[in-house]
Length: 118
Image 1 (cartoon, one colour):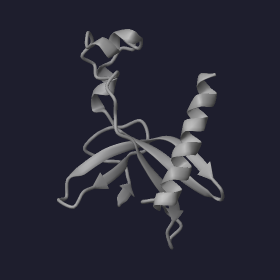
Image 2 (tube, rainbow, N blue to C red):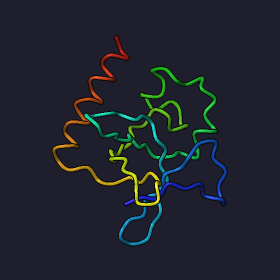
Image 3 (cartoon, one colour):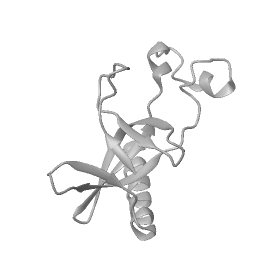
C-alpha cells in the first residue's frame, strides 16, 4: 500500500509517506497522529500540502471557511487510517486495516479529538 520514505526531489521537514495507486501515481502524506488501539498502532495520514508553507497563519480563524482566503488551510482534507506493522527486516510499514480495525480507530480518534476540544 505505502512506502515510508523521504522524496529527494522535494524537501520536507518531516517523514513522508508515499502512497502509490494502481496506475503508479504517487501521493504524499504525513503522519498527523498515532492512535493506539489494543496492542496495535494506527497512523492517521493527511495529505502533505506543499502550499502549507505559503500560509502565514494569519488566516487560521473563521475567515478560511468563507472563501476569503486562498491559502487552502481551511479546506477539508481526506485522511487515511493505516495500521503500522513491522516487516521481516524490522522496518515499519503501513497496511490497510480490517473493517473492524478501521471502525475501532475511527471511534478512538473521535474520542481523542473530543477530549482535545474540551
